[in-house]
Every structure is written in structure tokens, then in C-alpha cells.
Figure (cartoon, rainbow, N blue to C red):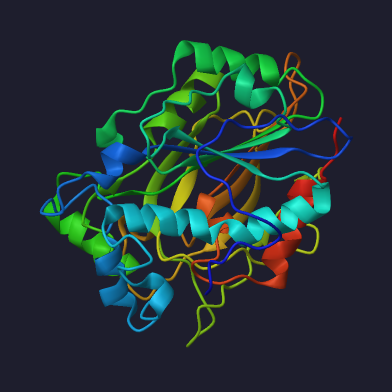
Length: 341
């Protein structure tokens, strides 16, 4: 995959230029990590860190053995893997940009140069859909400040806003080593350690906003035998009043996806729109409890003081690391064109 800039010169490390309202959605991505903290992790640590790009190359060989992934052109440490996440959203950004006529803005909580970028008016003023990608490790202690929660709450009072929350998996949260090994053997990804806990920032944001969801586990979705093609989701289309699942039968494969556990019995405040079948070939504590599917897509309809929508879906749905399909692109289009009020 060539990374030569398309459609003009590529810029870096500059102040975001506000996008004027045109009636089409202005989409922003917010990575919740501290890039310096994550990229500076001791690679001798077994748990709660990202893989290095060298480890990715070793496991995925020969996928990344072309010149553009070499040490001469691409970072080989943990920073390389973080950049791989950025690269993997380019197709999503391109498609949404073409649909909306607005570039997708990308922010990081603490970026490569150490600039701290909290969610505030500067981000929210020209954003209609804010996608919060919860890929900060719990041990990095990222927390949503009261000012950020208040800013988002006020922003959601604006007609047409949509907050997409995407806390990632929580693998091996137990002290039981046998259970950690069971979880590891279930998802079968050698790049994920026995314990990898994500999403403290997103969790604190959900608590502050009253979103009754907890991200749990890292479950391997069921696929068509011999392929990475997902089995269709169980979609509750009668509840999908926004039409976000129109033309959507599957998302995309990822070896360890979170179960979004709903922590309230109030079915009016939050609605389950889709569940993903689990790969049952190897045991997992969640499966042993009698579950054969996990919650993968939820929607909180507008409430009395909140005209904006809140949806939950994993960040990997917007990446191409494990492929892209027409069904997935339909989902991207639906999000980009959802009603503005």
C-alpha cells in the first residue's frame, strides 16, 4: 500500500481550520490516547501495551515486507503501530470527505509533539459527528475532565449532533491467570497480551454523560469457515429509526471485539441495534455464561435535554486493517448522511 499523498500536498502539525456549516455533516475523530505515553512503553513489559511495528511485521509476515513499511520509511517501534491505526482510517476519511464535502478532522488527546488537546469548543464548534476512539490503556490514567463532559453535554443540545463512543476491548481484567489464558486462546491474536485493558477515558466520559454501558472482554466473532468473512449480525432493524443499518449485514473482522454490556433496564434510554455471533470453537468465560452473541451496536435516542444522538460501535469498524466490504461502506455512508435534526 503506497502512502504517497493523494489529492494535494500533505500537511502536518498545524492548527485545525474550522469547517463552515453547509448542511452536510462535519465529522471529527478523537483518539483518546497519549501518543507519547503509549509509544514510550517499555517493550519488555508483557501486558497493557501496543505491539511494536517489528512485532506486527513478524506476526503478519510477509504482509508488511514491502519498502514503504521498512525502517527507512516507517517507524518500527510502538509508534509505528499507532501510525498504522491512523493509516487504517484513511479509506473511511476519504469516503466521508467525498460524501460530505468536508475533510474529516483528526485529533489526539496528547499528540506526538506533546500538545494536549482536550475536547472543548475549539473541537466541537465545527463538528456534527464526534467519534471518540477509546484506545487508551487503563494504566495511562486518561480521564475526561469535568469541563470536557460539560462541553459535550452542551454540544449535544445542538440539533443534529451525534456522539459516537468507541471504547475498545478489556482483555484479561481478572487476576485469574487461567481465565486470562482462556481469553487469549479464544481470540488467538499473538499481538494481544494476556492483559490489555482499554478505554478509561471513554469510560469516564460515559459515566459523566450517563451512558449505561461498560466495555467488556475481547471476543472473536464468528466467520464463514475458512475465511475472515463475518457471519451476519443479528440486527434489530425495527429499532433502527436512523436507518444506520440500511444495506448493512456485517461490519468487519477483528479478532477481539468488546461486548457492550448495558447496565440499565430502561430500554427507552438505550436500544440494542445489533449483536455479533461469537466464534464458539474455543471456550471463553462469556460463552460459558450461555452467550452466543455480543452487543456490538447501540443507540441512545434524543432525550428531553439532549436533541443529539449517542451511538456505540467499536473503532475497528472504521479501519481497514482487516479488510473492507460493501456492507461496511454502506454503514460509513449511513453515518455520514444521517439526519441533521
